[in-house]
Image 1: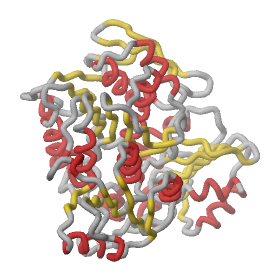
Image 2: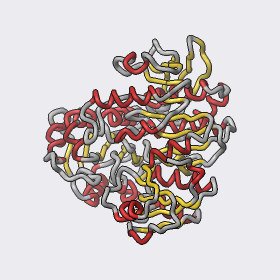
Image 3: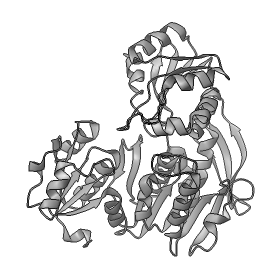
Image 4: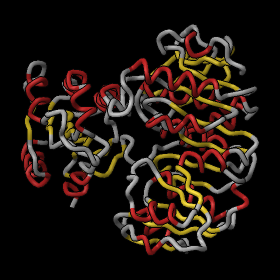
Length: 454
């Protein structure tokens, strides 16, 4: 396409998504004229409206006018969307969201892209905290609300851009980062990828896009050399004891928060006590350290930035207390994430852990049914609710009761409840002071938290 700077009036189809709204806000800060549409009004559309951006609720071909010179859309928009079709009829240039992200990133000197099946939002947020603390004026676009800035976006300077790199539909292959991070690689998005080998191939291609830069990669990934051999960039590993960057002297505070030393090439650089629980967040912190340290950020700024991070919305987020019962919202929707979250919750001071789980998409549920059962069984009590379809139809013939039956083989304390009102009644009846309730999943089961707290 032509240069982004050659466009002035940009229209977003699906502007209410977390990533699209972020890019729209960044473009407004660069004095582009931005408007867009979304199926429904949500918090993001309300926020963008408060910034002076015109938002059309619903997609209507009349919204696409001749003065628009660029239309941006997401993978969620179907090819017969009437706004998309109208833009084609008028000969307006049309690009996908990830292409726009790449174009914006390319205007920055240091482009940090965080990829992986899990932990992208947390790690991106940690890196953002470090660069904010170091007064580097970063531009930031992440997939969750960073609590300290109450936003997923920072419209900063032109030197540093920090962004999540999502593997779904290979969208991260549009990027050419100067610092790329690969956190982990698991079987996921199997409605698009054929199998784990196909996913690994995509991540290998992502790594090959880092020319004359730095790849920071978790060396617990199996067959690591498959990703690192032949690259035209520096490779820094983190994770286990054979890595360039590792954690040592790991302890846990009385509140279940990890404290540890960060070792780089055999030398202790800093000690850190995180404000978020879980050994998986130790790993995320090592990746964040690697990104910042490779770009010359001072060690004390990295330490303070990591310790500033208090979490992102829907990532083990404490929503409140009800009669001495702590209620959390957690976005975990893959077995690996679920296992890590439940392990972290169980390390906290508590009585019993009640996990309400809403699986996300039929294809993921069917493909990973046994793994879901194993991970969820670690909770003291499990409530399974209806699968969040996310625009899918149940062509694979999977049902929440299938998951309940598998969990029962390991942990008998499980039940299926469809309606959220009934889940709330059940929890209020069963839970006692000192218990923890977590609503887990990437759908809308987090509504249960607010219902409990009313």
